[in-house]
Length: 141
Image (cartoon, rainbow, N blue to C red):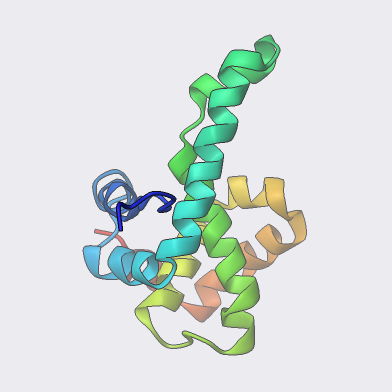
């Protein structure tokens, strides 16, 4: 009734970030964020919380990391990784804008993906060009 306990929605912030900073076409950014609106907002909220904690309670190296980290990048790569494992591997969203957005996010930031799963990052790097030869031209401006 009063909105207590509602999870924050980071859709607009993440959409603006993908479109303005990454130059992703709004069609793909919106398709990806619309499909994963709830889980991506939860991931982003947790990322922000963790970074706030590191900024105040971490040692010098952790504080420096927290100050120099863009949490939206980790949120997007983390959600794209999860989406690939849970949806694309099982045939969901294949042939859609959501699939292209997932591949674009993962292949655009394999450096971050490598910190999560090195083998998977290598797989993405080796496959995206043969599977989607014009991925970057199609998804990004």
